[in-house]
Amino acid sequence: KEASFDNPGDMVLLSDGSLLVADSGNHCIRKIDPYGVVSDYAGVPMKSGSRNGLKNSASFNRPFGLCVTKDESVIVADSGNKLIRKIDTKGIVSTLGGGTTNLSFLPMNVCAASCDGEEFLFITDDSGLWKVNLAGGITQLVCATKGRDFQDWYQTDLSGVKFLGSKEMCHSHINGESLIFVRETVGSKASVLMINADQKVTTVVLRWWPKLDQLFQTTLCCPDGGIAVDDYGCMYIANFQSHFIAAMNT
Image (tube, rainbow, N blue to C red; front, side):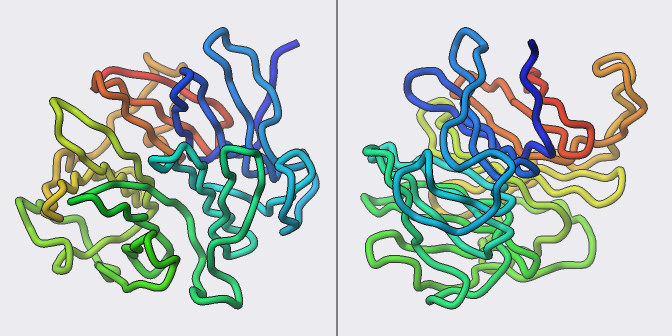
């Protein structure tokens, strides 16, 4: 029997080659091993909540964003609860911030990156992009605000960039460089932005997405879920509304 997902969101690759998927509509995190076998990784399928504890009994509410930190912990943008959650290497789920604690927002995605020995989270919500220093917990500032139209940025300081639309992120090392990719979509127009370690932003894709009939046998014009890019430049795309995951070379 084939496994099924309900509104899959973000994805992240683990060091063992497995792929984690935020199965948003089922309120859980799923795991696809290197052989293609799907299993439950964290949360209770089809049961929403905000319970912490062991990952198989913890609960989430429409989790969407995922990333992995240097110590192999998994960070979850638990959108329905307005929380940032952490699954550590022992399988314990805890709350880092959000809700009624030290951040109050609607997190849609989260990405971990390192610069000069410090580890950061980048978090998107409906107001823009946040940057958080993990050393002192989730306390920090908004780095970018919401814009009105797509722009072609080139080596622009992050603090001056305007973000808009659906924001999905991933982190990758390509040719030894640590990079964050942010995908935004409004209607059938999409943009992919690249943020380097110096917090300079460059638009790497700014165009109308073509119809993907030949690739996906669908009239869908634009992928609308999470993305992941591996160190070889292969991009994985989740389609939130059509419930499938695809892979393509960048």
